[in-house]
Image 1 (cartoon, rainbow, N blue to C red):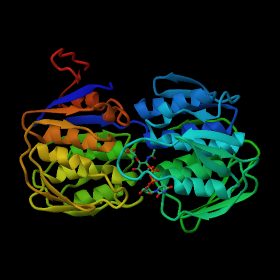
Image 2: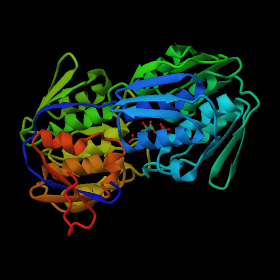
Image 3: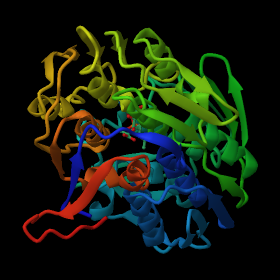
Image 4: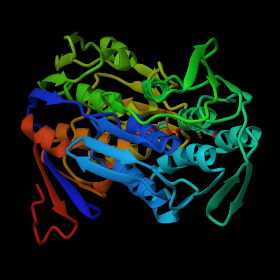
Length: 428
Ligand code: EPZ
């Protein structure tokens, strides 16, 4: 899918039922957690997306046996074959850094290439490395690799200077096999972190949630292999909720967890759109009128940075000017230049985007720059009149399972073609 293009004919009404897949950002740390045990694991509801395939490949390189059957995945790391996660693996996904902590904890030695992933701003890992150093690791860089060594890591007291999702996950996993107790404070509290804690406890880890977004972990000498179902993906859920808010769309979204998207539901209430909550469904119907709003991204349970681009696309349809402030990453407005090519009127000043509405979008040729920006461009294409061509479509397949197929089932007119469109190969 590297050179594929998404072609969308916009202004088609979306209606019907769509099912949310497993959460990529829960599965990534949980697959890495299998390094902490030599026993077999079975995961269910695993999203089959590119970032997950990269993680499975990385685990295979260090010695894991894996077997995918549909959305079920068996994994077992009986014995280490390598302590190295090579550059070509690490540079495609930020999640490779999640191997560092568990591998160091199990093996006392790890060599991981500096992580890649979405170019959405500084993707620092200083808190990850600072925490592991305090746990007794000797860490230095060699070319594009991080080398970490430790006879045996030990427990620490550590307060994260700012909330970091993978930083919390990395140190949490390492602490599960450390000597003694570890107390982590100002931890990220995203549902994906909570589901990792749930998995680790099933494996036999001794973890208590304590005050001030804290985790108290008593290190164990070994952990078990278990079965675990991946929680639904709240960012995919939010993306489809937003897709239900324009034209006269009417979506019933299944495998939904309303608790995970409370901040989005609150914003939709402010712009005049109410959702209907079922047992594990969310129904959203466009009402036509959308009011402008001011939104700021912040760590969970605040408005997620991973839905900022998608909301920005929707706000081009609001009657009036909205302001979107991005507080987490310093380069997460790359979708805006592309949306403006479709006729949006969005201005950026520092970390604030002012979205003028209501604007009629028209089809054009645009480029996906990162995973969530690509979802925003798809939404733009669905709203726009005429044909929109989104290049670098591989970005989308990193984190959204079957997105084109799911949208086509709802009534969208979408094709995936290869880069040289003159040989018009319809991939779907
Ligand atoms: C996770 O990235 C998610 N990825 C991201 O989703 C998500 O956008 C992000 O959390 C924020 O919610 C995965 O879970 C695999 P951070 P992560 O560490 O952990 C700074 C997607 O689209 N920071 O929480 O890499 C950092 O620069 C992806 O699915 C440090 O300064 O993000 C950023 O400003 C994109 N030092 C802020 O913290 C550190 O050591 C939050 O980053 C670590 C982070």
